Length: 113
Image 1 (cartoon, rainbow, N blue to C red):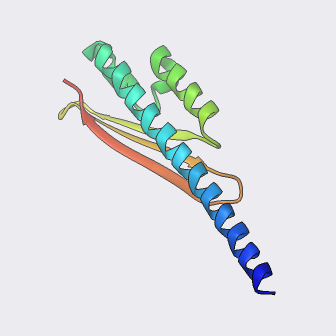
Image 2 (image 1 turned 180 degrees about the vertical axis):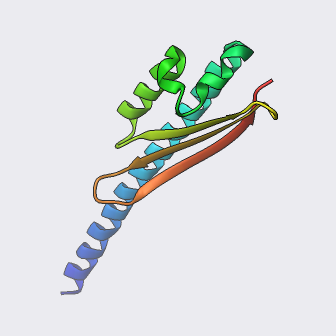
């Protein structure tokens, strides 16, 4: 009987570890995608930086390509992007939802100059 409870405990622990690994994988993917977008922005011209806002993103090829990649990489992945021209700051929020769980978010800001 004690052995059975021990086995059930190990099975529960393994399920928790598997869930934590999945969450870590998606957080890492979101961080990598955010850094990739920053790289695209730093490589682009200053005149194109307003094109990296959420509403304009799909019309600007580098941003649209990145958004498609995000949607493929994360379950129900989407992003909110904002460009503050006065401070030359970008705010990137990446969201995803794993099946059967609540949504998760990765947030980053950077100055592009």
